[in-house]
Length: 213
Image (tube, rainbow, N blue to C red):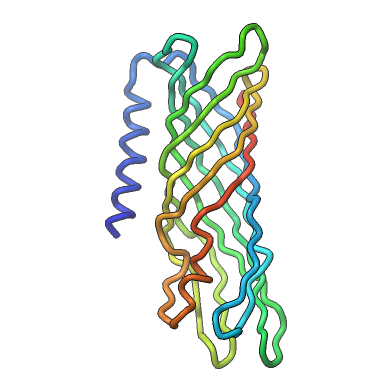
């Protein structure tokens, strides 16, 4: 609960400071998307079931506000409201039972500080980002494995921190690589040795793309 309040408060403060700063030189709106690059495959200790094909993608509106020029660099803020879909395939290792695809859908709010550097006369800029993100579960699948667990479901809140870098082309197209650390668990599961596999994807890499208008 403390982590949830802290991440949400930081995100709100950054957004408020962005909107109240009089030195904003450029505000752009656009569409942002990302695809997860991690695809772990692991067994729950005791060989009860297998988790594989963990995939993730996000899409949604984005805003960028640049201000406070620092010599050759520009400093600003970016934020987005992203629909995020996480999927994984769960299968039993013992006994009968069909594979089950579990999907959890979140609304994620990343808020990042951003710095951009021009490259001479080329229509290119390099950028770096860092900041917190928070997500709220809007829909999630329950799963149960007979005689093992009943009604396991994702938590309603998740949060973490981002660190990214990339390149901007023609002042409107941005492509980057993002590293994210999750600070909360995906599932609240008390069965011994289950917590780490179900909540083990704490670090992830994504490739991102944004088009600003």
